[in-house]
Amino acid sequence: MRQQRWLGPAMFIPAILYIVILVGVPFVMAFVYSVGDVKVGSEGYHFVGLHNFASVLKSPTFLLAVRNSFIFTISSQILVLIGATMLSMALQEAFPGRRFFRFLILLPWVAPVSIGSIGWKWILDSLYSVINWVLVRVHLVKQFEAPVWLGEPKLAMISVILVHTWHMLPFATVILLAGLTAIPKDIVEAAAVDGAGFFRTRFQIILPMMLPIINVAVLFGAIFTFTDMTVIYILTRGGPYDSTQVLPSLAFFTGILGSDLAEGAAISIFLVPLLVIAAWLVLRSAHRAEVT
Amino acid sequence: MAPRRARTWVALIVTWIVRIVFAVILGFPFYWMLITTFKRTSDLYNLDNNPFIFNERPTLEHLRLLFTETLFLRWVGNTVFAGAVVVLITLLLAVPAAYALARLTGGWGAQLGIGIFLTYLVPSTLLFIPLSRVISLLGLQDSLWSVIVVYPSFTIPFSTWLLMGFFKSIPRDLEDAAMVDGLSRWGAFVKLMIPMSTSGILTVVIFAFTLVTQEFVYALTFISTAAHSTVGVGVPTFLVRGDVFYWGSLMAACLITSLPIGVLYNTFLDRFIEGFTVGAVK
View 1 (cartoon, chains in turn brown, red):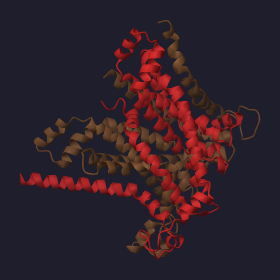
View 2: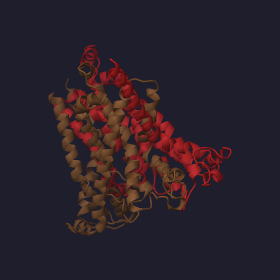
View 3: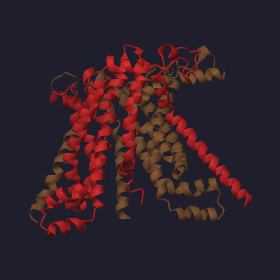
View 4: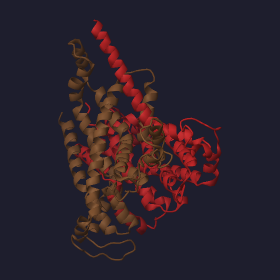
């Protein structure tokens, strides 16, 4: 039995070390960089206090990126939530072809997002957009006045929100499906016997019971959206005129492409408050699970 | 009962409309990749043609271009290689860690497990700037090994979390009996628990691998030479020459990459979702 005392730690310490070195250390370094003067290729480190934050907060691009990040995250999560609730209810019961439908519906989440986004870049092409072709054919717009989806600020924002929603919807749907299967069937059947109709059952009985699982879907969805830049990088590179620039993409363009590691780090630090809130919510729900 | 039956019909129709509308919207880009892959260039770029159908005979030209004149196969090879090494590192570290945290550490093992899961939420867009320095200190910049070293930092947390749940579901009595029969704790782990968790371990293999194929930000940050790239970065960035998009070949690459990963991931998705919903589904 004596060997057990060291066997446990010996088995989990390597994994913990790996994570500490490649997540913990860089996490702390991000803070250290944000109050220093590090650039790509520069030597040494000088503490500069809040200088980087001051210069970031003065930049109009940064303020725009903060605003865009919230617009991008909140709009796409609202759309995801509505879509996923409808879709999960429609997919819950067995029906012919369910497996095929499920596969098709999951593809936007399981295919690499950079690849799916390139597909959309072609669908939203300035000249050969299939959407515009349809719009012209049904005489909604004229051939040479067709919308330039990724070239006009408002349309570009709408496009990246919709494409990101397309990517995240399956993830929320499967989470909600997992929650739906946990709702006892007899409650729904009892409601039907009492005369509750299709829509009433859904809105007044199933939906309230889904709330805890909807919270989980929104929590993870919001984190993955607020901290991601892939769809935006591929479709617009933050343009036109920074109209789709979000915090992660701005950190990338400043810190990596612009070589100003310190200012890039300062920008990405603004992702931390949301992460802290998210971590707190995860801990709370895990704690609740232990108590019950 | 007449209104009741009418209601059931309405319910059925509404449900099918939802299913079909979402399937069409969500699946459309993949249909578009498919049709673009086989269309002749003259057909693709003629605005008078109906883009939904083949107006000219289909062609294999885009596929030929993709396989013979681009680095596509190289990127696929890089990705498979990186995925295999990352899976190996993940298994070596996560399987013992998950077992130890599920069995040998009592109450605080569970706390530590949650702590490890939380690190999965720390995004690449917060860590990429410091990590780019770490990578260059290690001399790995612009090498495929940069992502091989970094990717386990997110595959290990999720895999450990999933496997902890898996080990906990195996009854303790089995190990106790094996240990009474003379196996050591380590022996029970290697000879009993690992064989019994094959399906959990297989799930982790698939996930670590698909997460590698899907990752974009780190690969974009650390690797700048086309030949060292992974497929997720190579296709959207290096397949575009200057400002010219070879849409036929590009869409072929997208389709060929998406489908196998999609099928693989789809098979094990339910387990992945369990990892997120622990605590909310009872």
